[in-house]
Length: 304
Image (cartoon, rainbow, N blue to C red; front, side):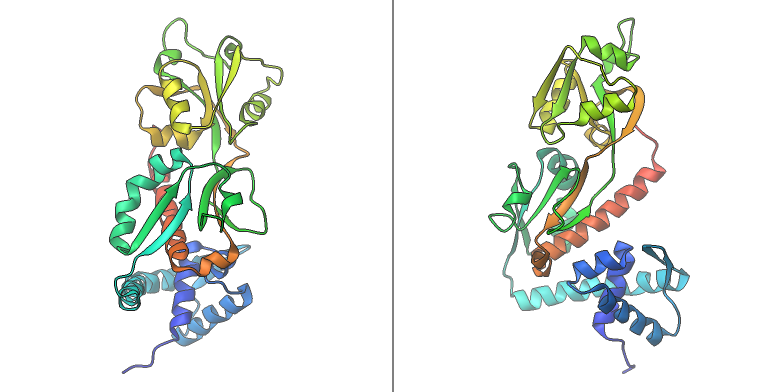
C-alpha cells in the first residue's frame, strides 16, 4: 500500500479550502492557527508543491489545490459519515439551535433535507425565542441571530453582510399615488424589527434625511409578520435586501431604488468549546458551505 499523508493534515487542508481562512478553519478544528498552518505545510511537503495562494488575511486554492480538493473531499466526507455510523451505532445526535423565525423559514428549512441526507443521525431542536446568544449552554448549543456584533468571548462567524432597503406593497410603487422619494415616508407608517431597532434612523441618515419623521413607527418582533403587513399595504418595512429576495413574494417590491449598507448582519455563534461537539461542528461546516453556494448563485442571478 502506498504511503498516505496524516489524516489530520488532509482534514486541515479541506477545512481551510472550504472556509478560505486559516483562522476560521483553526477555530472550527479547535486548533491554534500556527498548529493548523503546520498541518497544511506538512501536506504541501508530502505532495511536493504549494496548494494555496496566500493573500493578506485570506487563502485561496491554486490550480493544484483545487484539483486535490475535488478528488479527496467527497472521499473524506464519506469516511466521516462511515465513522459516524460505526461509532454512533445508530445513536441520534441532537443540536439545540436558536434561530430567528425569518431566517429559519427562508434560509434554513428549505435546505434541511440536504443536511438530513448527508447526516441522517443529526436531529435539530429549533428554538425561535429571543436573546439566543445569552442562552448558549443554557438550553442552546449554537445560535443564529441578527446583530451588529457578537461578544468576543464567543466563537462567532458572520453569515453575510447585507443592505437595508425600503420594502412595500407593489401598489405603493405604481400609479399616481406611488412613493417615489424617501421624503414621502412622512405620510406613511414605517415598520421596524425589534432586533434591528436603529435601522430606520441609520437609513434616513444615509439617504440625507436625518430629520424625516414618518406618520408612525410600528415595531415587530417577527420578520414574517413585518413582510406580511407590508405586503398588505399597511406600511413600509425597513428590512434587509436578503429578506425581500428570499421572500419570493410577488406582492412585495423594493421602494426608491436606494440601498444602504446595514449595521446588522446574521451571525452564527456558540461557546468556543462547543465546536468540539460533533452536532455543532457538522451544522457549522454545512451552514457555511451552503452560504458559499448561495453567494455564488447570487452573483450569477440578477436582483429579483
